[in-house]
Length: 307
Image (cartoon, rainbow, N blue to C red; front, side, top):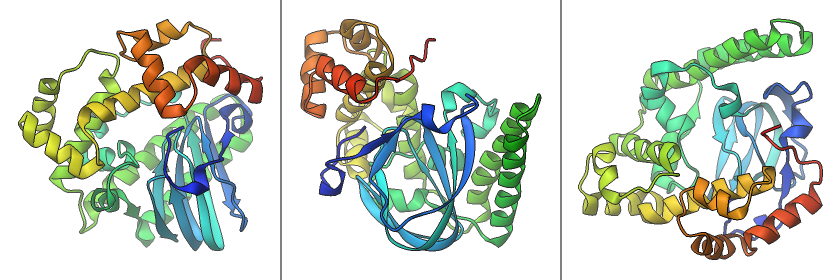
């Protein structure tokens, strides 16, 4: 879980994937009417939220924003959130684990819509975060709701072939989201696309020994200009962001795997396990060993993804 300064997130609950994927297929859709008192929580899967009715305030560690019918947004694994000022808020939760589904999205990943919606990081400052939000128009909302009904129908059948049809429908929904950006007057800026490319590069290469010079062809700016640009968008340097990303990846491995702490450090890109432990303790207020022990005591049935 990422850390934040908002006191509301001093205590959060984990919603673990083993509780929400009853058939072990890591894609589920649920219609949900939000209660007035929503417990701050995070989860070890991604979640697309579509607002079907009502309104509320979506509260995250990095800021809050009002939500209304037609709004659709992504909550990445490990990021705490909750809802406030709820008024008849009805949403659809689409829960999924991208790496497990491994959907063949092809060149869709090269579109600006994919960058801004699926690669966006909640740490982005207000200007960039506002650009990445999406509100579907009536036609798009109807199409999205029809696709969701298809997924739900196959989910209820749960027969041979249902997982295939759920995956195909979900890919259509992803495509609809990406196309929706190009059909709206407001398009993501070139700056946001560049930031998204850098974040995606980090996501794909965090275990490698990266240099700032490696980011120049990705971002299309000089090292000094890129550092200024990155600080403006995320309030931190590229190196600080990369270290935090590696620590989040390490925390996920500690929660789910039994490999040694030194092995985890190496897997996420730290060449010095002592430095890794120091940085991990600074971020999570627990040593890697203590973090693993505390998590296992609280959630003893946590699955090992290698099983």
